[in-house]
Length: 354
Ligand code: KG4
Ligand code: ZN
Image (cartoon, rainbow, N blue to C red; front, side, top):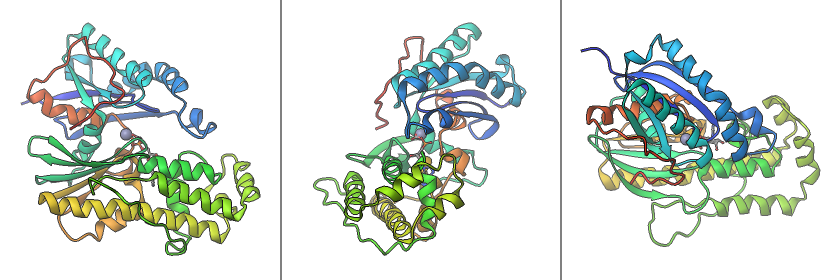
């Protein structure tokens, strides 16, 4: 049987992405247009600018994905698009374009939840062999969710953040210390030069679901630490370093701040890994998936590799952050079930997976 090719489109946040994936596993092309330069100067994603950038990028990005895959519309089985969660205006661009393409080509439309996409990214790794039930941690700038995943990709929510997402905590702490956006990669790399035991952060007291997360207290603790030390000049000096290399940022970071970053990172990783281990045990997981932008974190990868228990699968860095190949991959089981959306599909800023 000929391969079933799906064109995936993703525009939920600040990347405009399109990809062609065969049989939910083989990437024929994956194009990501990042808006980092636009948002970087504001220290975070500006929703109005994001939708405008998506409008500009969507047509060339989709065309490039088809060209690189050597595919025409008649070679496709379906078009998949992120339905939510995400920024409403950003989602709308991808959905509207996907609907228009389906109307013109007669191809079926498949709606995909962004979180389901992140979980499926690992299916695009040749080595990945998931055994169910899977414990999935989706950890990004917008989400920190633990799911139990069953055979055939059914989901049960086990826990989630009650305030900031882990990536959001990274981005906010970086911003407050004068580092560029996004903060995750910078803190991750600078952490390697600091002592993770130097600053003691307490764990939040969680009432109710012990598998829920909370990161806003940690962010506030970092703020208090900074205020207590009067670091205004140090921080202002770093803010002036526009487009600095990691070496330059490191040179502008005193030992005590490197220790703070390492301690912050160790705390975040500890909170994540502790709940991954507890929930994997609770559901009798036979494999673990860690996905989303924060899954790029070197410290998290090391800590997860040391976990006793079932094998842990991480997508490669490019498939951990937002992309459209993961959306096309998540659409494949829906194609097999002929689970199609229609022209009434709307953007859903908050869309639960389970
Ligand atoms: O999945 P993603 O591209 O977009 C969302 O759906 O949010 O994730 C982006 C997030 C940002 O918060 C970024 O700071 C974080 O992932 N991130 C990291 C690392 N690389 C990206 N956080 C910690 N360590 C990293 N190495
Ligand atoms: Zn994402």
